[in-house]
Image 1: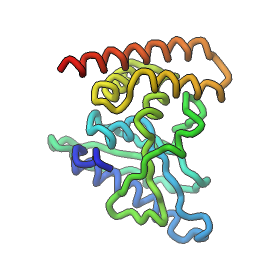
Image 2: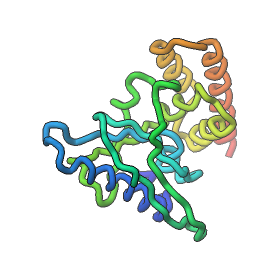
Image 3: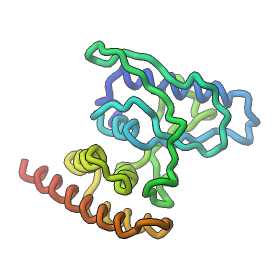
Image 4: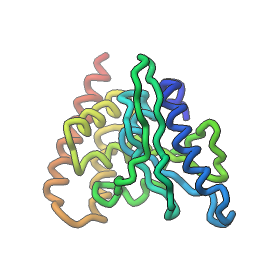
Length: 199
């Protein structure tokens, strides 16, 4: 992935170790079950794409049901020398947020050092789908992440609205609240793009 050059070496090494641990769990699986696809979302995806705001957890879903041990966390030191932990979040659930039905198909492959893609194929949510996934919860951090993606030219407001509205078709629940958040996300992305064009 092109953005990898901007990601701190320490974080990438820790991320790779977590994925290597996953790969070790599936190494003896039936070849017909491989590779297991690992779809990365959330803060880890944002950091891999932009190099901004390192996340302590990895939100990911897999193409197969996995039985994993308890050792899927790595201690490392960031670029400032501070001790940090990176772990696979076992509580992540992509059905409790907004996600386009084509998000995983449109995800971006990422080569991870030391990980055999024949065992685990790591894929990062595309910037547009990453932004859409942040609309349902729409916390202050989610809004900042959408603004960052727009400010750096990775998404545009019209595409974000269209993709999010398409995603709504597969959901039940408080759709009016989600539509309000889509409108707000559109404005955030539009304002960020306008500021980017001025500079």
